[in-house]
Image (cartoon, rainbow over all chains, first blue to last red; front, side):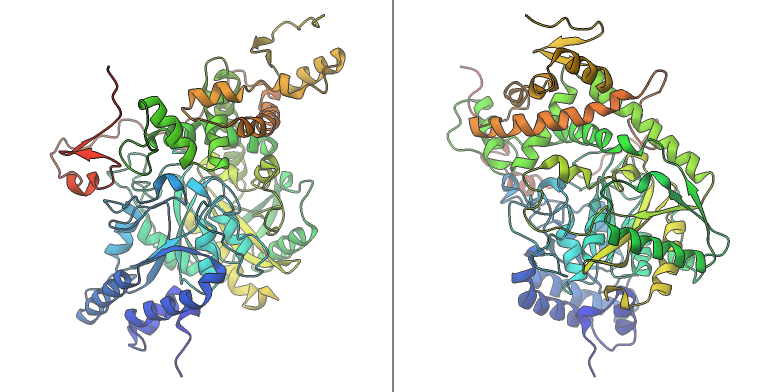
Length: 483
Length: 131
């Protein structure tokens, strides 16, 4: 009997490829057929390169036959539409980049290619990665694969929906304040945000340069570990990438948690924490205890200032990064500009959506003369306090376990008129970006029929610790978590 | 008559920048509780101009309300005593990242220029700058 190729894990697909039970072309064909059947409703992809993917798959099959294939030889990958893949569009789900064709590969893409991966298609997102529901895409709506009336989360909502919805085996996302972990939690897949500096940002369209990271979104923690081994490492094209050795994460995974200490931050029990989310996360923590972990309470006292700090720093950096979209060198340009100023103002007015405009204005304001000290400089100082909170917590434990989000996915339109409410949903995820540490979201049950994510946070460059916790938990949890 | 502004408040465009606790005490004492858009201090029209972003009147109206609320919220960071705390600009600050001074191939010029909205002879065309 032929297995359903679209429901495989990456490791499962590699085993079939290795045993010649299927080819890379079979994988691409199965996914392209699944996309044709399901994606008109799901809306995970914004573009598909079926012919290109098939050609790359043929090359991968030849390489495997010749014994020269890499670790991901023949594995199709879906890519968030914010990473440059040479010869493909990269719209960042924005009107302003319609028509843009990337003239180079991002380093993350080059590393996947070198390992033999196949670039399948590009996934939907909030415009320029700004948002938590993918409703800010200028291109299309992406639905939660578990319930069509609910958002998939964001900003990497297309990647999460593709992996959880059966139209991708694995995907790349990016995470500036939770944009890998939160959609993974909402859709029910695994999402890893590596430590800042672990994965090169070269070729990632910048949102907030001191917070952005590229990371894998997968169906299992073991798959995330494998992709992260390929993605990680220093890159001369990104001087903020760090030259720390990348461990063989897949070899460090264990089935128990003996000898590990897990911290539960007391500040993460907040008003508005959904009872079903709390229940699922508490049960998951109990499961980790049964696996041999010691569980202690820790304190992250500056948590309540994290959202404010994040939205000052992220918008400040975004306002500077998005200055490049001016209608001169690439992307859309307004017609009949009278002078350069008119060109910039009208190109940007027509090209950016409301959330991007809001953030550019907020970021410009906090950097403007007279306000810089009160907002931007203060926020950078609070960032120091948040970093110290984590340093002190990690002096007592190997990893922190928390809910990934205060609530499960919500309905379309529920928060679109109230941006502040939308921002407050990021409370458990933004701290990892501010502190530069690593974080993982693993499905741990349901609340109201929708997936809940267990977030595991670890010290900077200790991805092996959170992957170990996530893997052991995932094995103990088993397959039936969706109920 | 304008209420007397407590010492330490810096005023610009009718804006107060001070710790939230003091701001709230001041607005209570002076009966300014409900004038939140005035105390929050963001002038969307002015800032949009700095950002080279044309906004419609309707957008300015919407953003003024939303961003005033957000600016009020982010002021909570000024409740903290930040004396003597060094700012963090990067989570893992690196210094002096050097590379060898070698000539390497750049991106293909023709491929890059294909993305230009308007170009001629390998150069970008923009509206006339000097009369």
